[in-house]
Amino acid sequence: YVSFGNDLLNTQDNIAYNADGLIIKDNIAVKYNFVDDSFESFIFDNKTKLLTPCGKTKKHIGLLNYYKALVITSDEYLKHD
Image (cartoon, rainbow, N blue to C red):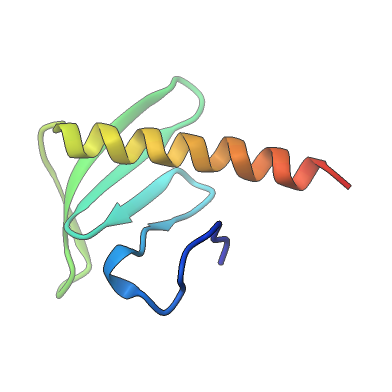
């Protein structure tokens, strides 16, 4: 688990993401395609853990921008000695 400046015990503000471009916060999710810089947006059902495709909203775009910033920051952090 990679986290920068977050309280890992505070589950209200947690954002889950992975190296395959999936990021989830609350009930929204984004799947980012690194190759062509495109993304799909979803509604996330916490009970069933299923993703349902939906239209792109400002929240999805904000989550995508957050993810891109995390990837860039992580990349720079890991490159340094």
